[in-house]
Amino acid sequence: MAAGPADTSGSALEHIGAHELITTTRAVRLRLDLDRDVEPDLLRDCVADALQAPQGSNLMRTEFVIVRDPDRIAAIGAIYREEFDRFYRTSEAGLFNRVDPDPRHAAQSRRTRDSAEHLATVMSRVPAIVIPCLTPRLADGDVLAAKHRLGTVYPTVWNFMLAARLRGLGTCWTGMTLGREAEVARIAGIDPAVVEQVCMIPVAHHTGTAFKQAWRPPAEEFIHWDTW
Ligand SMILES: Cc1cc2nc3c(=O)[nH]c(=O)nc-3n(C[C@H](O)[C@H](O)[C@H](O)COP(=O)(O)O)c2cc1C
Image 1 (cartoon, helix red, strand yellow):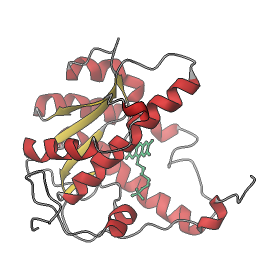
Image 2 (cartoon, helix red, strand yellow):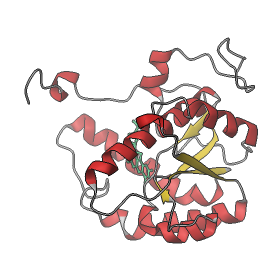
Image 3 (tube, protein in one colour):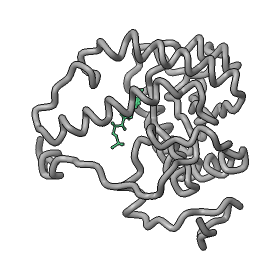
Image 4 (cartoon, rainbow, N blue to C red):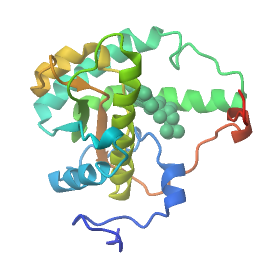
């Protein structure tokens, strides 16, 4: 790893081209280094980069709870594991019960399932868990407002994950604990009456160096020129 020319944050950046960065930043689960600490400065620099993302009406409402305390991580990891075992294993849309028609997609989903199972077993031991949050909470039933407000959070969160990759950190967007938000809130000292958890991201230095593009269907299958 060497300091890159565009590094204004203090932490050294990996030399990864923009195209490689956006096409090979994967969900990292099997290659999370559980034995290496993630320094707070690195995480702070990732948040600084994340905040450069587009913001609806220039509202900066995404805040990050960064949990590094091993006891809190163990408690959150236990909830994650329970949700994975009780809810996700039996969910219709989840990777354990769904069969994707395309064999390449199905093979990839099997690998994702195995990797996700591994994450469920190690979530309690990752060096850091980042919980992007939105304030004030979304209003029940107001889908239009939710679109606007979550649309402001998601690019910021993805920027965080790209920024982490540039610093040799692996991340994985997870939603597994959102159904247990109040319990996670208690562990992380979040007031659930005003603060909405958007997702939860394990962060660790990654082992190995190479990340590849994933299989995806051709773009044409996802485009409707001029009309749907
Ligand atoms: C909204 C959302 C929720 C997700 N929730 C989880 C999760 O709870 N656990 C997990 O292991 N991965 C989760 N993922 C990661 C996806 O499984 C992953 O991005 C997808 O399989 C594609 O993998 P790739 O990015 O490595 O190509 C989630 C991703 C998104 C966007």
